[in-house]
Image (cartoon, helix red, strand yellow):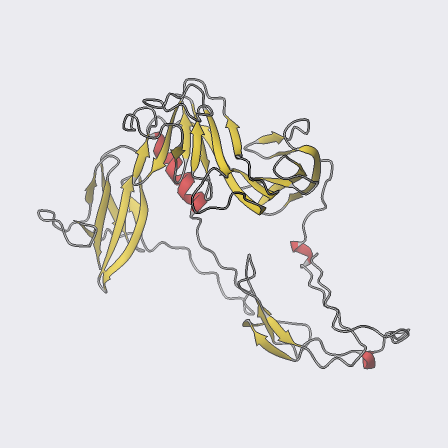
Length: 410
C-alpha cells in the first residue's frame, strides 16, 4: 500500500473533534488543475471521472484543487493499491529464487559487506529478491542495493544495481563480473551494423583491452549458449581484466565478462569525481545451442527484445461487455531469420523497411499483410530508391548476415 499524507495547516490544540461527524468533513476534491481525465465507474454517483497519470519519474504528474480548508485545520490523502495489486508479504529471510527455468541462491558471505535481505516478491510477471549493504564505493547500510528478478513467462534473469556513491578523486573503477562456466566456447557481440568475433574480426593493433558491445554479448559452445544484454553498459573486458595489455589481437582464454560500470579516468571535460545515486541493469538468458542457426540469431532476438521491448498501454476496463479485439499483425516476415531495424513511410503508398539477416543463411523473404497475403516488395537503397535490375515481386533474396532495404507497395 502506498500512503501519502499532505498536511495543509497546523492543527490547533483541542481542535480535533472527539467523534467523527460528516458535518466536520471537507471535500478533498473541487476541480482539476492538470492531468489526463478518464471516465470512471464509482460507487459514488457524483464521481464520474478520475485523474490519471502514468510515469516512472517526475516529468508527468496530476494536480487537483480541494475545497477550502479552514484555518487551523488539516487534510490527509491516502493512495491505496487495489487488493489484488498489493505485493506479496516480504520474506525477509529468503536467500534464493527459483522458477521453471532457473534456481538462484545469494551468497551472503562474499561481495557486499553487512549484506541484508530487504524484501522478496512474487507477482504476476516476476519474482524478485532485494539485498542491500555497504561497499567501498557506496558506504553505509543503504550504499549498495541489488535487485534480482526472475520472469515467469520468459527465460531471463535481470540484475538491477543502485549505488549511492561517495565522492572520490583518486583513480577508481567499478565492474560487474560474470564468470560464466562454458568450456571450449567462443564469444561474439553486436557492433555497429553487424556481429563481431573479438578474436578474429578486429583489425590488428586496434583496441583490444576493451570491447564496445551494443545489444548483446553471447558465449556459445557445441551444446549451450548464454547471452548478456544491457541498455546502459556498453564497454566490457572479455576473458580477463585486460588493462594495459595492448594485445596484437584479443586472446580470450576464459568465458568471463567484466562489465565496466563506471570510472573516473577521464581527464578532459569531466569532473575528477563521480558521486550521487547511480543505477544500472543487465539481463541474462541461456539455453541449448541451436545448431541450425548462427549464434547471433538467438542472441539478437534476446538483446533487441530486452533493450527495445514492445510498447504497451494500460487502458481502463470497459463499462460494457464488448468482445475483445482479435489479435492480428499488420506485417509478418516469413522465410528468413531477420530483425527489423527501422521502418518509415516513403510516400502514402510505400513503406521502407531496413532488415538485417542474423542466422547466417541466405534465404527468400516474404512479407504478409493482415490477411496473410504476400505483399509486393522491391530491393531499394537507404533513401528508398529502387535498385536497378531488381523488380517488384512477392519475395526478395536476403544474403547471409546481410542488411537490406525493402520497399513495400500497397
